[in-house]
Length: 114
Image (cartoon, rainbow, N blue to C red; front, side):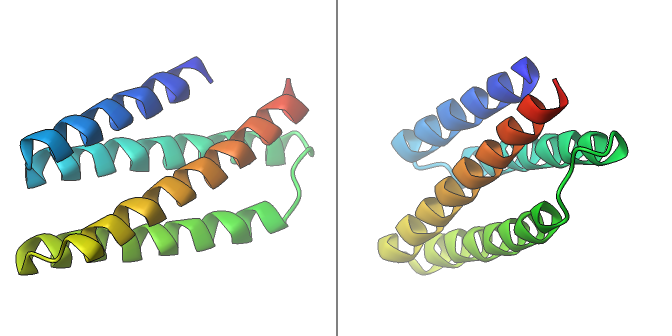
């Protein structure tokens, strides 16, 4: 769990630096770090499922979260290419909401396992 928190923190720092430096590459790197957090949370959920402490709707929520994250990344890339700051802001807000939601589900799963 500590690794996921460190990865999440690194993603937030990379996103902040990307916004300050106006770098699309750093922004995509932060999205990759957040994807690592989501993947790590999914692994926690699978481990909990193997131990019998997992509720099936978490998989549906995780799939929905990944779908929203994909839409968010698309809006960021489209907004950056068309110089539409509102679209980029929408993508960032979607990513933050997905990360908070999936991270919360991961914490709940980890508390049930541990």
